[in-house]
Amino acid sequence: MPGGVFDGFDPKIPKIVPKKSYVFITIAIAAVLVLLIINPFVTIGAGERGIVLNFGAVQPIVLSEGLHVLIPIVQKVIKMDVRVHKSQTNAEASSKDLQEVTSVIAINYHILPDKANIIYQSIGTGYKERIIDPAVQEIVKAVTARYTAEELITKRPVVSAEMRGGLVERLIKHQIVVDEFSIMNFSFSKIFMEAIESKQTAEQLALKASRDLDRIKIEAEQKITQAKAEAEALRLQKENISPDLIKLRRIEATIKAIDKWNGILPKVTSQNMPFIDVKELEH
Image (cartoon, rainbow, N blue to C red; front, side):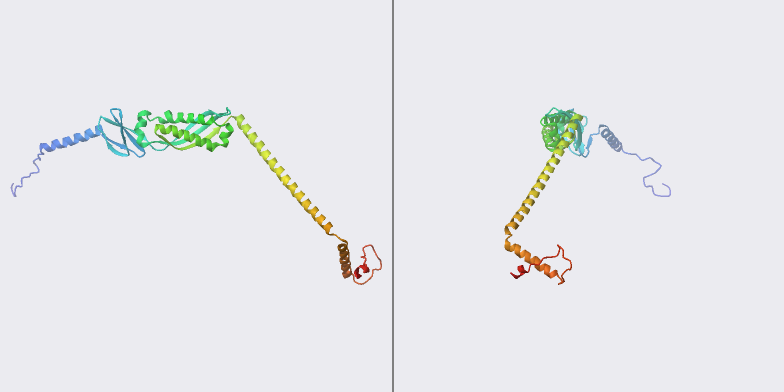
């Protein structure tokens, strides 16, 4: 190169890339495109479980939360929610005394996470409509029939506990856990509710009358006791009165009159003037 030393590189001459490099880049790009197309990865979110299907057949493994690799074309994943859900069901039944009862039942439930594949295989994802609602209806009818309409109101905690126990036992067979159970409402016919209200009013009036009667009896007993005590006091006083006591009381009264007298005889006498018996004072 004129005016300098030739270093073997000329920017005007295009650089020749080896064929091996082209092949490697092509394979890498193709591999990325294939991965994007077949997408062998699956992410299981929080509160979910993955049901693995091999050509549609449910597998024993249940995928937990996180990133997982699948066999392309062969495997497929169905996600199921295992968090706590709320279900509200309206149930109609008849009480022991043949009263129509409408109940609103609310439950919180969740499926067993490690049994999600069994639930999907035997029930599918619609387990609320297929299992929970019918179970609630049946349990409510069975328990309600053992109590009268009035007992359903007065013994509500007992009725609720009995319904919960029956529902827990029934749903656990399907890998469903009952977390909370509550009877939102009991509804009866208008005529029955009016009868209940009238009965309660009558019972309250009867209770008030009974309390008033008890109070009157107690007051009467108190008066009788007081009268007996006064009569007994008078009797004792009469027993203790003697001629000597009467004479003593007269002397005491005479002494008091003398103490009050100023020594001047009144010019006009009256019946109010005290009579002083001197002979009594001498004895």
